[in-house]
Image: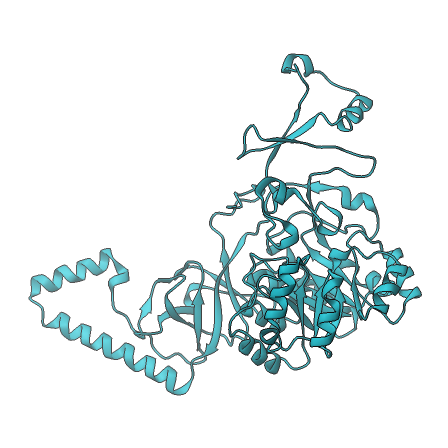
Length: 500
């Protein structure tokens, strides 16, 4: 089975490939249902072409999955020359109005039907096949038994299903909540994730008050109330703005779903006839893309006998260290599993602290070493030339403010220096942890690593986003390694403000 990972920008595309994805899906500006993802634009096609060369055999799928209005089709036609510069292997679409255009202008690219089309039966699959589609991304409401039936009926059609990530409380994502409350349409890529917000449930009955309604009701009364249309939701940041909630026999209109997780059930998906496993998350972080992709890669390799289940287990366990909500198997086994909801933002005890780049070797390393020593020697000469009282004051200042002390690094046998792109605070004197495509995790104690200013060659005590640094460690770090640290604001069991 193919492993298909999300890529909201070029950086995430690299990590999707590096951490084991067979294919990745991207969006292009204005034509994707994830407008808030960085998506791809301007001359980024050059970087994408380079990545395809760096990872031969990996596929690139492009989501053109919005519902197109006429003016958007005009814009699509106006951008065709630009799209041709991307090495796209397949287009993911829901609007069949653009199918003839794509077939004419991109004859070598496959057509994949988006899950937004809610295709959940074999007759529909046959119809889409007749239109030229080679793959169906099945509606998320489908069961394993229904997948098996479709595969038996149309064996030469590729079937793709979501296996991990956020789910929508709506039929295949066709949610109007965001448009209703914020004017941002999910069907145009502007979803504000309204279903994740915090709501208060009230009984909106004329003349009702707490004393009149504060009594224990029976199960039948609760059912009647839920189906009465009198229940309303009020979002905590919009007091007084209420809208109704109605519960039917097999649905509740507005609730926050659990996250999908099928990594323990890949053999069932394979046996049902699934050809591609899709991870949700073009708006998620580099860390999410890397860790989730790696976990499913190892699980698939174990399924294929390339490694043992015991070898794959630590990588799968790392999914708990990625921001997530409670998990569910969705509709695959039982509709009741999908009906169970949750609340709060996704969270993790770890934060991505830095991306590790290439190793500084030979001349680059020696040049940085020489620069650091030259600066150190100059500072020593300056100190020696000072009046004794001024020198004493400077030394006391160094004791109070160690960050001002000028220290150079020394060459260490068996140590390696790498470019380090800081993203969150990293401080010396603390343990740090690396993850990579090649090893599960590696923890280094303070005596096993140093932070080096990549411009001055001097040791520094901390770094964060925007500071050009290198990291000097006593281990070899594979390409694509990430540095993570414990998030100081994380509290086990406490839901943090998502910052929306």
